[in-house]
Length: 275
Image (tube, rainbow, N blue to C red; front, side):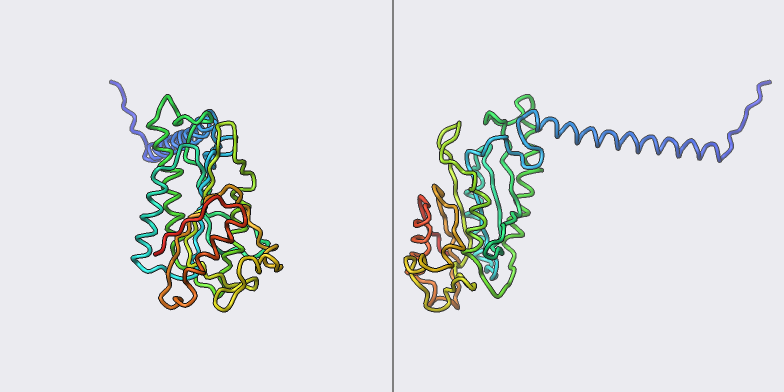
């Protein structure tokens, strides 16, 4: 008669532990392999795995700058998002989007909340030609979702006593457009800056809350030199936030001051949407 041997509970428990450890290890290997494969695919597509940009300067750069020193009311927030959505919905493949908040002081470098390209192959095609669905999944995860989070953060009020708009425009434009060239291998390049602000400059360099110099007069002051932006060939769009308690400062002359300032620094256009 064959003798059955009963396994001890300890041996059964040990086997289960080893099985679980093996499963966890296998899962970890799959995750690491998946991340490595995703990085390899982006590199093969001619893209940087972190920025999703190609090796060459993007053919289009869209810079978004938010002055969140004062809260937007609900209607203004809705309208701002509608304007931005209409612009960002049709971002060309390979274009880079930079998002900043107006916090830089004179001489400081600007740190973007977001700076990535809408994924495309180095040759400008739609991405992983062998699997467009995988490209779209990556675009949603690494471009669309993080961009939405950055916009949501940028629209939140960040109250502060000063409003260094000139300083931040200088810092962000140098950061975004310092390598900009009007022409590249693919033809004419496009650069644009969209600024959401009440445009009431208020810092040691200049304040718009009292009598202030015109652009010509300001160009002869030290503040002009310390806030030189890089706007050659850049199209400016101003989303001008009207403040009920600042109507005596926000007028046609004030809006014209800003467009003249941008034009003096080489901007190719200056359009204003008032909210």
